[in-house]
Length: 286
Length: 147
Ligand code: SF4
Image (cartoon, rainbow over all chains, first blue to last red; front, side, top):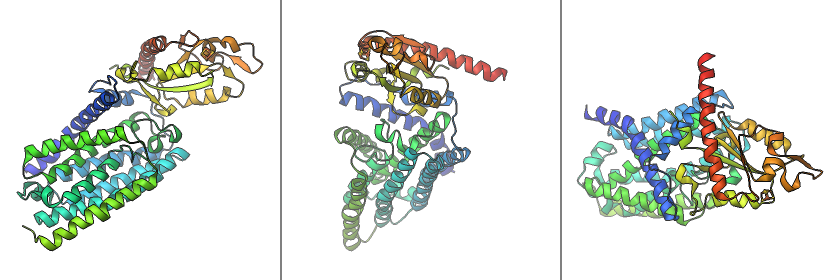
């Protein structure tokens, strides 16, 4: 019962929280650049505006794909907050991204093609690490269920420092931050136009934005799991993590896609894998 | 609700400007003027844009380009011609390859004078354009209602 309530609460509240985080993100970014920056509620204004605009559709199928992206992203989070199996969450998460890539391919434009290809590359780059993260939680808490992991008193972060740093690396990819914002970003890439989202406008673009808010909340939820033994510490960790991401975003310029791939797999192979090997041999679960 | 005014995304196109006006447009994005305060974002994508900012006069080579970009911007949209070149052709008016101001090819809503136009007047022009944008949206809604 509580899990259903948590899932519904997520569906309703996540866009609000995600939008707010994105607004704070833009404000802090602006301050880091010595600017005043937009109001905190700016992301909501943006999305509300997008729904006011004329809907220009290149191919009808793209709208279906983007709707599926939004639905599966919401489902991912609902499963996560309902305390379901983390592996199932990860698969729903991947499926959602497959839909946005299909949507971009459907639009038949060179820019969205490049964006879609680059999105696939980043999908490949972060997938190994995200699965190792799930495995790490299993080794520490003895369960793949988010509910059990969150309730576990084992201090996951102490056992999984490598996995955590690896997860931060792919978090940068997932939040579309520099240096890994190869497929699309919040700032215009003049040479790729807007990459993945070039051909989406109006309400469709608004849905992508909302899906991204849902996504942010799930990702920060995974950060929470590392600190699940102490909720207060977890919230602090989430805040610190996010500010760190903004800082990285503002410090680095965008790098080539090869770097994304190397960083994603490097993080998985070195940080994630070694951490798990050590854990496997020296610690036999709770 | 008038969210359009709170989040105008603009597309900047250099028709055949001497680059003077372009520098001034970009100056609006710097920390000194920071138009993102008003939610203004410089997008590179016509499909995401609401405000079309053009600098420089139209020449025979980019006539089609300007028309094409204009057609790609989803309604409601406004066009701001920045600098005297964009408003009338300016010093290049009599050139053999210049068609004249931007209004020779697409309807212009706001003319921003100056050579080069100052960042303050560009921001002023865009803010004026936002009022027009809102009017256009209301009209669009009415038409949808009656249709
Ligand atoms: S108005 Fe002046 S500064 Fe602007 S493009 Fe024309 S000549 Fe250059």
